[in-house]
Amino acid sequence: MKRAIAIGTMLAFVASQALAAAPACDNTGKLSAARLTMMLPGKYVCVGSFPNATWNELHGGAANNTGTIADIITDYKKGPGSDDPEEQVGTYNISGGADGQVQYNYGSGGVYSFYVKPITLSTTSTLLFCPKQTGMDLIVNVQSGHC
Image (cartoon, rainbow, N blue to C red; front, side):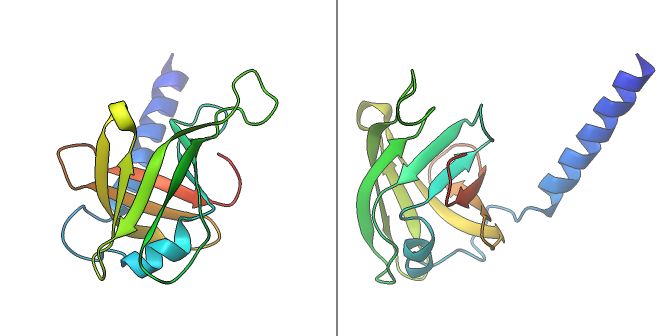
């Protein structure tokens, strides 16, 4: 029992330190639309990790530096040939110039807009999605392969 409490305390501390290192959702450090159009198209946006990712969505389209894009979102689920294959769930678009934003349209599931701030930028970028409407800040990974 003491070991479980110690491990739980350690995990809570590590999680709080990771969240403390994340930037705040405020009006500073937003990624531009041109940067977002280089980062998101053709990549998976992941909240959580395989096999239980909350989001595992492939953003359609090809990277560009125009600062605008509109394409489909495919929920990867378990992928091709599985008992839970991927399916198109909506669309997304990127706009906004220096203060880029991503808008997701899930049809009857709603429309959600975010501005994006970097936490780490590398092969797998970790980003903070800040809702433009009331909602929860999301820490996501953007990567080439599914979550």
